[in-house]
Length: 70
Image (tube, rainbow, N blue to C red; front, side):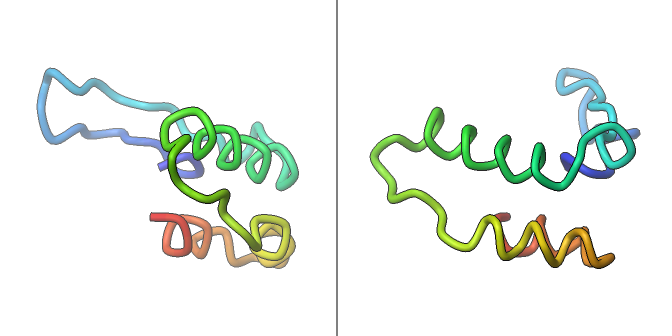
């Protein structure tokens, strides 16, 4: 969702979300998903390997970010 956004939401109540694929760097994406984990799941362990996935993201595997952390 972060990379490709939501152009057609399932429900009118949800709205859309812009894509950040072209406006955020790989490091910014990695920082954002780490922040979201801390903010919305403080009782859970921090995700590991965010930077490793970030390097894969930089090599053209951006979809892996969603699969890894989804």
